[in-house]
Length: 171
Image 1: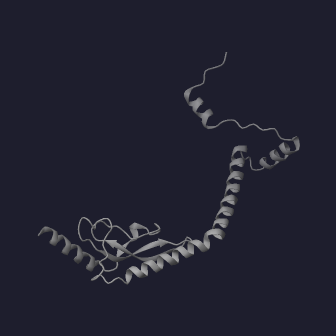
Image 2: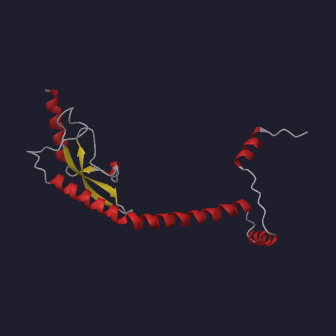
Image 3: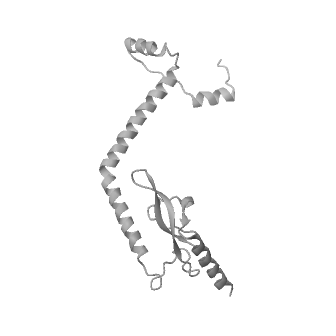
């Protein structure tokens, strides 16, 4: 009759199943010789080998992605920069830059701000953007700007504009 296992033993067996494989005798001896000096557990050795293999695979994938899409992502960045320069040239008297989230709730303008963005090559840089005075919405087409890093270009002007909007709303 089989002995009943405790719940903790059942859980341990489920989380750590046995891996059994047949290998040639020469490979088994080589494996044991390799583990003997370090007294490393076979499971630890297997995990380290799999981690190294995964790192090699990840590096190959990243290399292929950079080769295939590197020029494409650089082109997207150039288009984004061009679009931003166009937005900066708007004459706010004729074409006010309004927040897309707040425009139907009131006249909330976007003001120039600066944030840290992660480029396609993984480097970070200061980057100009627009930020709403009311809701804090940020112009960030590709989601590369860290929202916590965004600060208004001229904080005093931003606060004055917000006070003006709030006082107009109270009237």
